[in-house]
Length: 514
Image 1 (cartoon, one colour):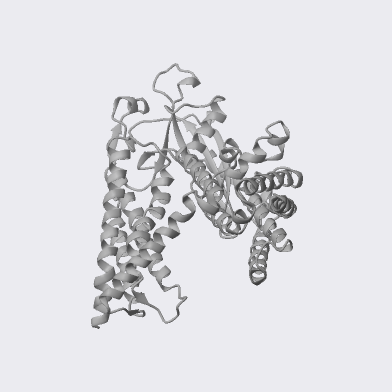
Image 2 (cartoon, helix red, strand yellow):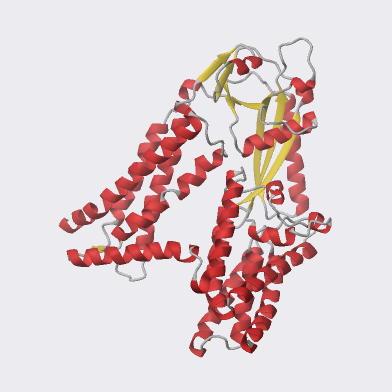
């Protein structure tokens, strides 16, 4: 029991400190920058999901991981330390999500107005109660969005956004005065493993069912309206508006979505959910800390903490700092991260960006590329379809580059990477007539191919060749098999793999002559 209490004293206070600091800093920033002064008008999904998922890991890796290093598990290669960090991060993430949701709704004021045009005369609010209003269904606009989700891209999410203009109070007006829109959203999930004809039929049925509902829609069956904030939903609602007014709406256009729930009940159960999430997370941590043993020698504890802390910082920063044998690797990695961050803060979805957004940022598709936009063959290599896509490609880049850049050198490694990415892009538009292709995987498969070529050319020490070959073949087969589940550009993978193998051998031979 004394040992268990020592473990708690060593780890729990740091966890609680990280927990409280995350809450204070995150909620403070949310209140200051978006509620009180509206300084940052960024996508709502970043606040709701991206930041709560990412932020806890920074202090956990820096401060909590060294503390967990003093625990000893039965198996030297046990994943116990990782599970403790994961549970800690999940506890903080869920708490941040629930608490920021409570904050935005609790601080939101309900503005009561008699007609739609009075919105301009009251302070900007998130919630409105309209006493009298009417809409013009004959002038409604429609926009659709389709996204792929799931571990194996097995889900196809269908969304339909319908914008119906509020009628101004003036007796005489024209459609240009339609600045305020009533937003209705429909959604449905189907299997992405169906063939194209089945998907098309299900989408058509979904569209027709939604239109049938709108024909009988009761626009006054609501408690209040919520102003759609900067988000993907707002983007698609504005596309619906554009389809109606035949021009691109500016930021002055307002979309109001009906809310059925009573305004006074909007925060019901959120506080209970907050404490429940905290209690469950801490409870699991307390249980998990029963099993590992504990170092009792103070000097050994301090030594282990210092060693773990150094390892943590090195693991995080090693390949972000351009230097030595990974100079070009780090530059490419940082460039991918930078472009992704710029995309996110410009409004692109953190997890599931849509096709039009990716095309705006340089994605590759046959019709645009063959129309003269050849630059897409290169730019798409640095564009990623969400954080998971970026994370796995970054991991693949590091794992493959540590074998290739030290052997080929910086210039030849960069040539290999760009050439493989270019060949992967060409293979994509040759094979797929209407697929939007993004990501560094074609170039990374080129690095995999180069490793195969270097193995054939005896570039690795004889004792290491077998292990290197087994590892890289495993990565190649896993990537290609994963691509069979759909939603992944295997043409780019194969194009990059073949070109990388050949160019890797050629570039290595040039290096030998030098």
